[in-house]
Amino acid sequence: MKAAATLTMDPITQQAPDGQITVVIADDHAVVRTGLRMLIEAEEGMEVVAEAGDADSARRYVLGHKPTVLMLDLNMPGEASLDAIPKIHEASPETKIVVLTMQEDPAFARAAMSAGASGYILKEAADAELVSAIRLAADGGIYLYPRVGARMASGSAEDELSALTEREIEIMKLIALGYTNTEIAEQLFLSVRTIESHRAHIQNKLDFASRAELVRFAIDHGLIDVSPA
Image 1 (cartoon, rainbow, N blue to C red):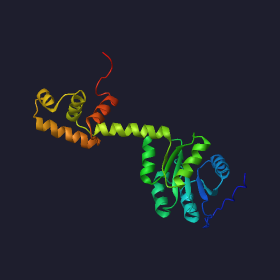
Image 2 (cartoon, one colour; image 1 turned 180 degrees about the horizontal axis):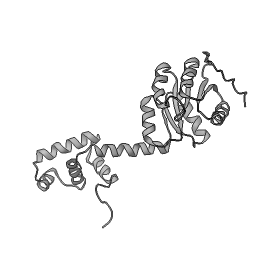
Image 3 (cartoon, helix red, strand yellow; image 1 turned 60 degrees about the vertical axis):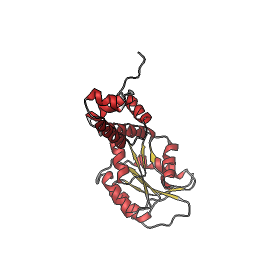
Image 4 (cartoon, one colour; image 1 turned 120 degrees about the vertical axis):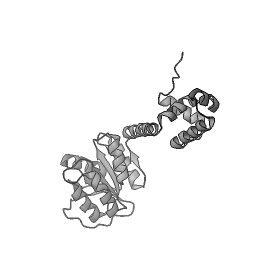
């Protein structure tokens, strides 16, 4: 393992070799920073150029070093990391921000990604996942911890369902059950034109192009019972 880089207390602009991934680590726990430094610097083509214990220091080091990636803890003393992300992103757009946290709540992940983060990974992740997140972010990609991503996707689906009115959900159930527009109109005492309008609104809101997609959505959300009689 190569020798650890000396931590510079005042940011000094440095030019990294071509292809080198430079990293600033921001975490308020020294033991976490030490572990991350050892992990990162054991990788070929990666180097930790600075460590910070709060978001303000992280911003100063990013401005000074212009690193490839900032590994940013979500919960640190002082300025909130979520508030610091857009400021850091604006000050150094080329620096990719990967949030490293214990927060599994997808709301935090959405907020971080919306603020400008390129990655969101839990501290429980395996070493290989942490390295993958850094490399993917450095290459311009997005890394989302799988379990958090699954919860975000589930939450998005619920948000889509909540976008429908009670009448639209009622009509979607009948469409999924195979009723025609005319049959639905007769059952709900509405005109066929009104049913067609509701159907178009449903498909637009959910971005569905076929009845098959609508049926699958209704099944997945328990709107219709497909269990054997």
